[in-house]
Structure formats: structure tokens, C-alpha cells
Image 1 (tube, rainbow, N blue to C red):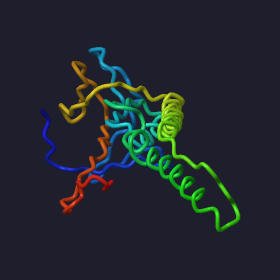
Image 2: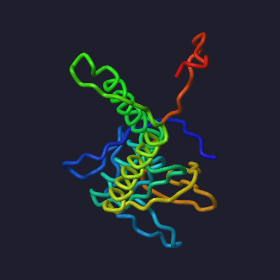
Image 3: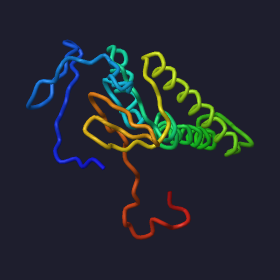
Amino acid sequence: DYKVTGVQTCALPISSMGRRCSGSEVPERSQGQDREGGSTVHDLIVIGAGPGGYEAAAHAGQMGRKVLLVEAGSLGGACLNVGCIPAKVFLRSSRLYRECNEAGPFGVLVEGVKFDAPIVVERKNRIVAALSRGVEAKLKGSGVKVVRGHARLVGRHRVQVGEEQLEAENVLVATGSRPTVPPIPGIGAEHVL
């Protein structure tokens, strides 16, 4: 396996369309030319299709780069599929329920208010599916190729997905993060979210 020993920052400036890396100049883009052995060289491989990864991939694709995006899960990452977006859907429904129950002092009488969790979950699923289709369309419209699977860095310019080795002039690791539960007493109690 390839071991990362140093960090080098790179920028793809919008204005000049050229590449600069800290400490050295990088040759102009390869336009994803094929190597003699038949393997395709991409300008950029992005690992991870969360908000950072898919936006970077789409932007590079719109700039004319040959881009490949590798994702093992759902496009959009945790934010779109199980985090931010679903949480906002649930919060909106909860807020409406509370407002209906507290509307009496405002002269609005709402009788028989009920919170129907399966309908809320169905609404969340529709919203997430629509946004995920939007991410997929954005990537397709930008010319980004999507490969499903777990990626592993095996060289400075090589990524392995399953049995296939892929090459790129640049590799962007945008794998996001994982939530952690802080060691707060009582946090695992029944009514604590």
C-alpha cells in the first residue's frame, strides 16, 4: 500500500485554468490521454461523493478535465442521505406539529392534530431521492464518470477500486467524517437524541 509521507497543496484556479502546487509547477493538463498500455489517465480522481467531493468533481468536469468519481455509498454522502437533509425534513414536520398545537392563543383552532411518522419518513425519502437524482444529473452533465466501490490509494497517481487500478494526474480524497458520541453521562438514556 502507498503510505502518505507529506502533504502538498494544489489549486486549480478558475481564471487561468492552469494548475499550481505548493513548491513546484505542474505541467499543463493531460486531457485524460490514454497511455500506450491502454490504461486511461484521468486528470482527476475524486474519492467520495459527499458535498465536497461531488462539487469538486463537477467543477473540474465543467472546466474540461477528465474526471472520475469513486463512491461506495449513495451520491451526496451522509449530509444528503442520512444527516443534514433528513434532519431538516423531520424538524420541519415537528415544528408544524408544535405550531398547530400552540395556535389557540392566536385565534387558530386546530382540532385532531396528529403526528404521522410513516408519512414524515415517506416525505423525507422523496426529498432525498429527488436531491440525489439532482447530484447524479449534475455529475453526468459535467462529464464526470462515476465508479461504485471502495477506493484505495496504491501509488502517487494510482487508485484501486476492486480489482481495477485507475490512474490520474491528481487524486482528491473527500471521504468526509464519521459522527462520534461524546462521553457525556446519561447520553445513552432512552429519551435522549
